[in-house]
Amino acid sequence: PTGAPTGAPTGAPTGAPALPAARRCPLGDTHGAPAFNRRVRDACDAGDLPLARAEVRRMREAGVAPTAWTYNTLLHGVATNGGGGKKRSRGDAPDAQAAAVRELLDEMAQAGVRRDFVTYTTLFRFHAARGALKDGVAALEAMQAEGVSPDTVSFNAVIDWAVRRGDLEAAEMLLTRMERACGPPESREGQQQQRPRGLRPDVVSFNLLARGYGAVGRTDEAYRILDRIRGVGLRPNAVTYNTLVKARCNAGDVEGGEALLEEMRAAGAVPDAVSYCTLMRAHSKRGSMDAAEDLLNHMRRAGVAVDMRVHNTLIDGWCGWGKAAHAWDHLRAVQAEGYKPDKHSYLPFIKLAKWHATNWRTHTDVLSNRERAAIGSALLAARRAGVIKANNAYLDMVARAVKQRPHRG
Image (cartoon, rainbow, N blue to C red; front, top):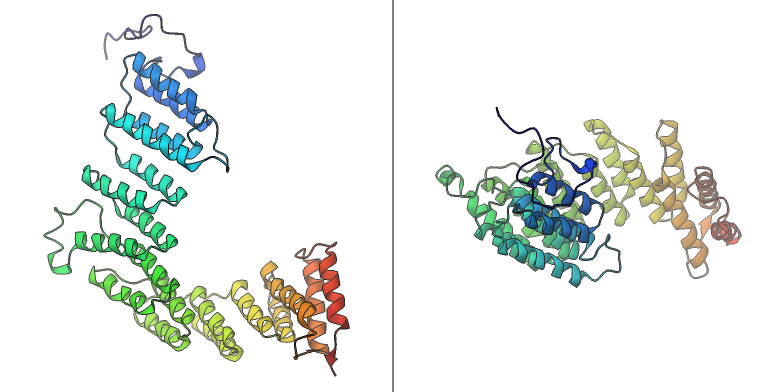
Protein backbone atom coordinates (compact mmCIF):
# COMPACT_ATOMS: atom_id res chain seq x y z
CA PRO A 1 0.00 0.00 0.00
CA THR A 2 1.03 3.61 -0.62
CA GLY A 3 3.00 5.09 2.25
CA ALA A 4 4.07 1.77 3.71
CA PRO A 5 7.38 1.92 5.57
CA THR A 6 10.40 0.55 3.82
CA GLY A 7 12.57 -0.14 6.87
CA ALA A 8 12.29 -2.64 9.67
CA PRO A 9 8.75 -3.38 10.89
CA THR A 10 7.61 -0.99 13.62
CA GLY A 11 5.82 -3.81 15.43
CA ALA A 12 9.09 -5.61 16.31
CA PRO A 13 9.57 -5.98 20.07
CA THR A 14 12.22 -3.83 21.72
CA GLY A 15 15.43 -5.69 22.46
CA ALA A 16 14.47 -8.71 20.35
CA PRO A 17 17.55 -10.66 19.25
CA ALA A 18 18.63 -10.20 15.67
CA LEU A 19 17.75 -13.11 13.38
CA PRO A 20 20.05 -14.53 10.70
CA ALA A 21 19.50 -13.07 7.25
CA ALA A 22 18.75 -16.53 5.88
CA ARG A 23 15.65 -16.65 8.10
CA ARG A 24 14.21 -13.33 7.00
CA CYS A 25 11.04 -13.67 4.96
CA PRO A 26 10.92 -12.10 1.47
CA LEU A 27 9.01 -9.03 2.72
CA GLY A 28 11.59 -8.34 5.44
CA ASP A 29 9.20 -9.34 8.28
CA THR A 30 11.14 -11.49 10.76
CA HIS A 31 8.58 -11.38 13.61
CA GLY A 32 5.23 -12.05 11.91
CA ALA A 33 3.29 -15.30 12.17
CA PRO A 34 4.45 -16.63 8.75
CA ALA A 35 8.11 -16.11 9.70
CA PHE A 36 7.73 -17.89 13.04
CA ASN A 37 5.74 -20.67 11.39
CA ARG A 38 8.51 -21.26 8.90
CA ARG A 39 11.05 -21.56 11.70
CA VAL A 40 8.80 -24.00 13.56
CA ARG A 41 8.48 -26.05 10.39
CA ASP A 42 12.24 -26.07 9.75
CA ALA A 43 12.93 -27.21 13.32
CA CYS A 44 10.35 -30.01 13.07
CA ASP A 45 11.73 -31.15 9.71
CA ALA A 46 15.16 -31.37 11.34
CA GLY A 47 13.71 -33.40 14.23
CA ASP A 48 14.65 -30.71 16.76
CA LEU A 49 11.45 -30.42 18.79
CA PRO A 50 12.96 -28.34 21.63
CA LEU A 51 13.94 -25.70 19.07
CA ALA A 52 10.44 -25.81 17.58
CA ARG A 53 8.84 -25.32 21.01
CA ALA A 54 11.31 -22.51 21.74
CA GLU A 55 10.18 -20.77 18.55
CA VAL A 56 6.57 -21.01 19.70
CA ARG A 57 7.52 -19.45 23.05
CA ARG A 58 9.39 -16.66 21.29
CA MET A 59 6.33 -16.21 19.10
CA ARG A 60 4.18 -15.52 22.18
CA GLU A 61 6.82 -13.27 23.73
CA ALA A 62 6.84 -11.23 20.53
CA GLY A 63 3.09 -10.70 20.88
CA VAL A 64 2.23 -12.95 17.93
CA ALA A 65 -0.53 -15.49 18.58
CA PRO A 66 0.20 -19.06 17.38
CA THR A 67 -2.19 -20.18 14.68
CA ALA A 68 -3.66 -23.55 13.76
CA TRP A 69 -0.88 -23.85 11.20
CA THR A 70 1.67 -23.45 14.01
CA TYR A 71 0.15 -26.16 16.19
CA ASN A 72 -0.48 -28.52 13.28
CA THR A 73 3.17 -28.28 12.28
CA LEU A 74 4.29 -28.91 15.84
CA LEU A 75 1.79 -31.77 16.20
CA HIS A 76 3.13 -33.40 13.06
CA GLY A 77 6.64 -33.09 14.44
CA VAL A 78 5.69 -34.63 17.77
CA ALA A 79 3.71 -37.44 16.11
CA THR A 80 6.56 -38.19 13.73
CA ASN A 81 9.63 -37.63 15.86
CA GLY A 82 8.27 -38.46 19.32
CA GLY A 83 8.18 -36.47 22.51
CA GLY A 84 11.93 -36.05 22.78
CA GLY A 85 14.36 -33.74 21.11
CA LYS A 86 15.54 -35.82 18.18
CA LYS A 87 14.03 -38.21 15.70
CA ARG A 88 12.23 -41.10 17.35
CA SER A 89 13.99 -44.44 17.34
CA ARG A 90 12.42 -47.88 17.39
CA GLY A 91 13.01 -48.26 21.11
CA ASP A 92 11.22 -45.05 22.19
CA ALA A 93 8.28 -45.54 24.53
CA PRO A 94 4.96 -44.96 22.69
CA ASP A 95 3.31 -43.80 25.94
CA ALA A 96 5.68 -40.83 26.18
CA GLN A 97 4.91 -39.90 22.61
CA ALA A 98 1.14 -40.16 23.19
CA ALA A 99 1.50 -38.02 26.32
CA ALA A 100 3.37 -35.39 24.30
CA VAL A 101 0.57 -35.33 21.73
CA ARG A 102 -2.11 -34.95 24.44
CA GLU A 103 -0.11 -32.18 26.09
CA LEU A 104 0.15 -30.31 22.80
CA LEU A 105 -3.59 -30.68 22.13
CA ASP A 106 -4.36 -29.31 25.61
CA GLU A 107 -2.03 -26.38 24.96
CA MET A 108 -3.79 -25.77 21.68
CA ALA A 109 -7.19 -25.69 23.44
CA GLN A 110 -5.92 -23.35 26.17
CA ALA A 111 -4.66 -20.97 23.51
CA GLY A 112 -8.15 -20.86 22.00
CA VAL A 113 -7.04 -22.38 18.69
CA ARG A 114 -9.60 -24.73 17.17
CA ARG A 115 -8.58 -28.03 15.68
CA ASP A 116 -9.12 -28.19 11.94
CA PHE A 117 -9.11 -30.88 9.28
CA VAL A 118 -5.31 -31.03 9.17
CA THR A 119 -5.16 -31.54 12.93
CA TYR A 120 -7.41 -34.57 12.80
CA THR A 121 -5.71 -36.01 9.74
CA THR A 122 -2.43 -35.92 11.66
CA LEU A 123 -4.11 -37.58 14.65
CA PHE A 124 -5.52 -40.35 12.45
CA ARG A 125 -2.06 -41.16 11.11
CA PHE A 126 -0.55 -41.03 14.58
CA HIS A 127 -3.14 -43.37 16.11
CA ALA A 128 -2.88 -45.74 13.14
CA ALA A 129 0.88 -46.00 13.58
CA ARG A 130 0.35 -46.86 17.26
CA GLY A 131 -2.43 -49.34 16.52
CA ALA A 132 -4.77 -47.42 18.84
CA LEU A 133 -8.07 -48.03 17.07
CA LYS A 134 -10.25 -46.71 19.93
CA ASP A 135 -8.32 -43.44 19.95
CA GLY A 136 -8.79 -43.15 16.18
CA VAL A 137 -12.55 -43.66 16.41
CA ALA A 138 -12.72 -41.20 19.31
CA ALA A 139 -10.83 -38.64 17.22
CA LEU A 140 -13.31 -39.15 14.38
CA GLU A 141 -16.25 -38.59 16.75
CA ALA A 142 -14.59 -35.52 18.26
CA MET A 143 -14.03 -34.21 14.76
CA GLN A 144 -17.76 -34.33 14.06
CA ALA A 145 -18.67 -32.97 17.50
CA GLU A 146 -16.48 -29.89 16.96
CA GLY A 147 -18.11 -29.16 13.62
CA VAL A 148 -15.12 -30.17 11.51
CA SER A 149 -16.63 -32.07 8.62
CA PRO A 150 -14.82 -35.36 7.95
CA ASP A 151 -14.72 -36.53 4.37
CA THR A 152 -14.77 -39.94 2.77
CA VAL A 153 -11.00 -40.26 2.91
CA SER A 154 -11.02 -39.76 6.68
CA PHE A 155 -13.63 -42.47 7.21
CA ASN A 156 -11.93 -44.84 4.75
CA ALA A 157 -8.63 -44.46 6.59
CA VAL A 158 -10.22 -45.51 9.88
CA ILE A 159 -12.23 -48.32 8.23
CA ASP A 160 -9.07 -49.70 6.63
CA TRP A 161 -7.33 -49.41 9.96
CA ALA A 162 -10.14 -51.28 11.74
CA VAL A 163 -10.14 -54.05 9.11
CA ARG A 164 -6.40 -54.53 9.44
CA ARG A 165 -6.81 -54.78 13.21
CA GLY A 166 -9.58 -57.35 12.77
CA ASP A 167 -12.22 -55.16 14.40
CA LEU A 168 -14.98 -55.67 11.84
CA GLU A 169 -17.67 -54.37 14.20
CA ALA A 170 -15.98 -50.96 14.32
CA ALA A 171 -15.53 -50.97 10.54
CA GLU A 172 -19.20 -51.92 10.06
CA MET A 173 -20.28 -49.16 12.44
CA LEU A 174 -18.32 -46.52 10.52
CA LEU A 175 -19.58 -47.67 7.12
CA THR A 176 -23.17 -47.75 8.39
CA ARG A 177 -22.77 -44.19 9.61
CA MET A 178 -21.64 -43.16 6.14
CA GLU A 179 -24.58 -44.97 4.53
CA ARG A 180 -27.06 -43.22 6.82
CA ALA A 181 -25.51 -39.86 6.01
CA CYS A 182 -25.92 -40.65 2.33
CA GLY A 183 -29.52 -41.79 2.71
CA PRO A 184 -31.61 -43.99 0.39
CA PRO A 185 -31.74 -43.08 -3.32
CA GLU A 186 -35.24 -41.58 -3.14
CA SER A 187 -34.35 -39.21 -0.29
CA ARG A 188 -30.78 -38.46 -1.24
CA GLU A 189 -31.56 -35.12 -2.86
CA GLY A 190 -33.40 -33.86 0.21
CA GLN A 191 -30.50 -34.75 2.48
CA GLN A 192 -27.80 -33.03 0.48
CA GLN A 193 -27.89 -29.99 2.75
CA GLN A 194 -28.25 -32.00 5.97
CA ARG A 195 -25.37 -34.45 5.72
CA PRO A 196 -21.77 -33.34 6.30
CA ARG A 197 -20.09 -32.07 3.20
CA GLY A 198 -17.97 -34.73 1.50
CA LEU A 199 -19.26 -37.53 3.75
CA ARG A 200 -20.41 -40.10 1.26
CA PRO A 201 -19.25 -43.71 0.98
CA ASP A 202 -17.44 -44.63 -2.19
CA VAL A 203 -16.62 -48.03 -3.65
CA VAL A 204 -13.36 -48.10 -1.68
CA SER A 205 -15.33 -47.87 1.58
CA PHE A 206 -17.30 -51.01 0.74
CA ASN A 207 -14.30 -52.85 -0.73
CA LEU A 208 -12.40 -52.44 2.53
CA LEU A 209 -15.16 -54.05 4.56
CA ALA A 210 -15.63 -56.82 1.98
CA ARG A 211 -11.93 -57.61 2.29
CA GLY A 212 -12.29 -57.86 6.06
CA TYR A 213 -15.26 -60.21 5.88
CA GLY A 214 -13.52 -62.37 3.29
CA ALA A 215 -10.37 -62.65 5.40
CA VAL A 216 -12.27 -64.25 8.28
CA GLY A 217 -14.45 -66.49 6.12
CA ARG A 218 -17.70 -64.52 6.42
CA THR A 219 -18.37 -64.88 2.70
CA ASP A 220 -22.12 -64.31 2.83
CA GLU A 221 -21.66 -60.92 4.48
CA ALA A 222 -18.93 -60.10 1.99
CA TYR A 223 -21.25 -60.96 -0.89
CA ARG A 224 -24.02 -58.74 0.50
CA ILE A 225 -21.66 -55.81 0.02
CA LEU A 226 -22.70 -55.85 -3.65
CA ASP A 227 -26.29 -54.94 -2.76
CA ARG A 228 -25.10 -52.26 -0.34
CA ILE A 229 -22.95 -50.68 -3.03
CA ARG A 230 -25.87 -50.54 -5.43
CA GLY A 231 -28.11 -49.27 -2.63
CA VAL A 232 -26.22 -45.97 -2.49
CA GLY A 233 -26.21 -45.54 -6.25
CA LEU A 234 -22.68 -46.84 -6.92
CA ARG A 235 -21.38 -49.61 -9.15
CA PRO A 236 -19.06 -52.40 -8.00
CA ASN A 237 -15.68 -52.28 -9.70
CA ALA A 238 -13.05 -54.90 -10.51
CA VAL A 239 -11.52 -54.65 -7.01
CA THR A 240 -14.93 -55.42 -5.49
CA TYR A 241 -15.36 -58.60 -7.50
CA ASN A 242 -11.73 -59.67 -7.07
CA THR A 243 -12.18 -59.36 -3.31
CA LEU A 244 -15.30 -61.51 -3.41
CA VAL A 245 -13.71 -64.08 -5.73
CA LYS A 246 -10.81 -64.41 -3.28
CA ALA A 247 -13.23 -64.80 -0.38
CA ARG A 248 -15.11 -67.60 -2.17
CA CYS A 249 -11.90 -69.38 -3.15
CA ASN A 250 -10.44 -69.12 0.35
CA ALA A 251 -13.61 -70.77 1.62
CA GLY A 252 -13.10 -73.64 -0.85
CA ASP A 253 -15.94 -72.57 -3.15
CA VAL A 254 -14.03 -72.40 -6.44
CA GLU A 255 -17.18 -72.83 -8.49
CA GLY A 256 -18.68 -69.86 -6.67
CA GLY A 257 -15.60 -67.83 -7.54
CA GLU A 258 -15.95 -68.72 -11.22
CA ALA A 259 -19.64 -67.78 -11.10
CA LEU A 260 -18.63 -64.38 -9.71
CA LEU A 261 -16.29 -63.97 -12.66
CA GLU A 262 -19.24 -64.37 -15.02
CA GLU A 263 -21.32 -62.00 -12.90
CA MET A 264 -18.44 -59.56 -13.07
CA ARG A 265 -18.53 -59.55 -16.86
CA ALA A 266 -22.31 -59.15 -16.90
CA ALA A 267 -22.03 -56.12 -14.60
CA GLY A 268 -19.58 -54.42 -16.95
CA ALA A 269 -16.49 -54.88 -14.77
CA VAL A 270 -13.59 -56.30 -16.78
CA PRO A 271 -11.74 -59.25 -15.18
CA ASP A 272 -8.01 -58.69 -14.92
CA ALA A 273 -4.93 -60.75 -14.12
CA VAL A 274 -5.73 -60.62 -10.40
CA SER A 275 -9.12 -62.24 -11.04
CA TYR A 276 -7.63 -65.13 -12.97
CA CYS A 277 -4.62 -65.64 -10.70
CA THR A 278 -6.93 -65.99 -7.71
CA LEU A 279 -8.86 -68.76 -9.45
CA MET A 280 -5.64 -70.39 -10.65
CA ARG A 281 -4.33 -70.61 -7.09
CA ALA A 282 -7.62 -72.09 -5.93
CA HIS A 283 -7.51 -74.80 -8.63
CA SER A 284 -3.85 -75.46 -7.85
CA LYS A 285 -4.56 -76.00 -4.15
CA ARG A 286 -6.95 -78.83 -4.93
CA GLY A 287 -4.72 -80.32 -7.63
CA SER A 288 -6.73 -79.24 -10.69
CA MET A 289 -3.76 -78.01 -12.70
CA ASP A 290 -5.49 -78.67 -16.01
CA ALA A 291 -8.28 -76.29 -14.97
CA ALA A 292 -5.66 -73.72 -13.99
CA GLU A 293 -4.05 -73.96 -17.43
CA ASP A 294 -7.48 -73.66 -19.06
CA LEU A 295 -7.86 -70.32 -17.29
CA LEU A 296 -4.63 -69.13 -18.92
CA ASN A 297 -6.03 -70.04 -22.35
CA HIS A 298 -9.28 -68.29 -21.44
CA MET A 299 -7.34 -65.15 -20.55
CA ARG A 300 -5.68 -65.10 -23.94
CA ARG A 301 -8.97 -65.59 -25.76
CA ALA A 302 -10.59 -62.81 -23.73
CA GLY A 303 -7.75 -60.41 -24.50
CA VAL A 304 -6.66 -60.06 -20.86
CA ALA A 305 -3.01 -59.05 -20.54
CA VAL A 306 -0.87 -62.00 -19.42
CA ASP A 307 2.28 -61.08 -17.49
CA MET A 308 4.96 -63.05 -15.67
CA ARG A 309 2.87 -63.01 -12.50
CA VAL A 310 0.30 -65.25 -14.19
CA HIS A 311 2.93 -67.72 -15.36
CA ASN A 312 4.55 -67.72 -11.92
CA THR A 313 1.20 -68.76 -10.46
CA LEU A 314 1.13 -71.84 -12.70
CA ILE A 315 4.79 -72.64 -11.99
CA ASP A 316 4.12 -72.46 -8.25
CA GLY A 317 1.11 -74.73 -8.66
CA TRP A 318 3.04 -77.42 -10.54
CA CYS A 319 5.94 -77.32 -8.07
CA GLY A 320 3.50 -77.49 -5.19
CA TRP A 321 2.45 -80.92 -6.41
CA GLY A 322 6.03 -82.05 -7.08
CA LYS A 323 5.72 -81.71 -10.86
CA ALA A 324 8.98 -79.86 -11.43
CA ALA A 325 9.27 -81.06 -15.02
CA HIS A 326 5.92 -79.52 -15.98
CA ALA A 327 6.89 -76.30 -14.27
CA TRP A 328 10.31 -76.18 -15.94
CA ASP A 329 8.83 -76.87 -19.39
CA HIS A 330 6.36 -74.04 -18.85
CA LEU A 331 9.09 -71.66 -17.76
CA ARG A 332 11.21 -72.43 -20.82
CA ALA A 333 8.18 -72.01 -23.08
CA VAL A 334 7.33 -68.55 -21.75
CA GLN A 335 10.99 -67.55 -22.00
CA ALA A 336 10.85 -68.48 -25.68
CA GLU A 337 7.80 -66.21 -26.01
CA GLY A 338 9.83 -63.25 -24.71
CA TYR A 339 8.86 -63.21 -21.04
CA LYS A 340 11.63 -62.48 -18.55
CA PRO A 341 11.57 -64.68 -15.42
CA ASP A 342 12.02 -63.03 -12.03
CA LYS A 343 12.91 -64.40 -8.60
CA HIS A 344 9.34 -65.61 -8.08
CA SER A 345 9.76 -67.82 -11.15
CA TYR A 346 12.58 -69.79 -9.49
CA LEU A 347 11.56 -69.76 -5.82
CA PRO A 348 9.04 -72.64 -6.26
CA PHE A 349 11.85 -74.87 -7.59
CA ILE A 350 14.11 -73.90 -4.69
CA LYS A 351 11.35 -74.60 -2.21
CA LEU A 352 10.64 -77.99 -3.81
CA ALA A 353 14.33 -78.91 -3.79
CA LYS A 354 14.67 -78.04 -0.11
CA TRP A 355 11.59 -80.04 0.79
CA HIS A 356 12.72 -83.16 -1.05
CA ALA A 357 16.26 -82.91 0.31
CA THR A 358 14.83 -82.83 3.85
CA ASN A 359 11.95 -85.32 3.61
CA TRP A 360 12.96 -87.91 1.03
CA ARG A 361 13.58 -90.66 3.63
CA THR A 362 10.02 -90.47 4.96
CA HIS A 363 8.24 -89.45 1.76
CA THR A 364 6.98 -92.40 -0.28
CA ASP A 365 6.76 -90.60 -3.63
CA VAL A 366 10.35 -90.53 -4.97
CA LEU A 367 11.66 -88.29 -7.72
CA SER A 368 12.03 -89.48 -11.27
CA ASN A 369 15.06 -88.73 -13.40
CA ARG A 370 13.05 -86.14 -15.30
CA GLU A 371 11.99 -84.35 -12.12
CA ARG A 372 15.56 -84.36 -10.78
CA ALA A 373 16.89 -82.95 -14.02
CA ALA A 374 14.24 -80.19 -14.01
CA ILE A 375 15.10 -79.17 -10.45
CA GLY A 376 18.81 -79.15 -11.23
CA SER A 377 18.29 -77.05 -14.36
CA ALA A 378 16.09 -74.60 -12.46
CA LEU A 379 18.64 -74.23 -9.66
CA LEU A 380 21.39 -73.61 -12.20
CA ALA A 381 19.26 -71.03 -14.02
CA ALA A 382 18.40 -69.36 -10.71
CA ARG A 383 22.08 -69.07 -9.89
CA ARG A 384 22.82 -67.56 -13.30
CA ALA A 385 19.96 -65.11 -12.81
CA GLY A 386 21.35 -64.05 -9.44
CA VAL A 387 18.42 -65.43 -7.43
CA ILE A 388 20.80 -67.85 -5.69
CA LYS A 389 24.13 -66.51 -4.48
CA ALA A 390 27.16 -68.11 -6.06
CA ASN A 391 28.51 -69.17 -2.65
CA ASN A 392 25.26 -70.58 -1.26
CA ALA A 393 26.64 -73.74 0.40
CA TYR A 394 23.21 -74.82 1.68
CA LEU A 395 21.69 -75.05 -1.78
CA ASP A 396 24.79 -76.88 -3.00
CA MET A 397 24.03 -79.44 -0.32
CA VAL A 398 20.39 -79.54 -1.46
CA ALA A 399 21.41 -80.12 -5.06
CA ARG A 400 23.71 -82.98 -4.04
CA ALA A 401 20.98 -84.53 -1.90
CA VAL A 402 18.47 -84.39 -4.75
CA LYS A 403 20.94 -86.07 -7.08
CA GLN A 404 21.84 -88.81 -4.59
CA ARG A 405 18.38 -89.72 -3.36
CA PRO A 406 16.57 -92.80 -4.75
CA HIS A 407 14.53 -92.27 -7.89
CA ARG A 408 12.39 -94.11 -10.39
CA GLY A 409 13.70 -95.63 -13.60
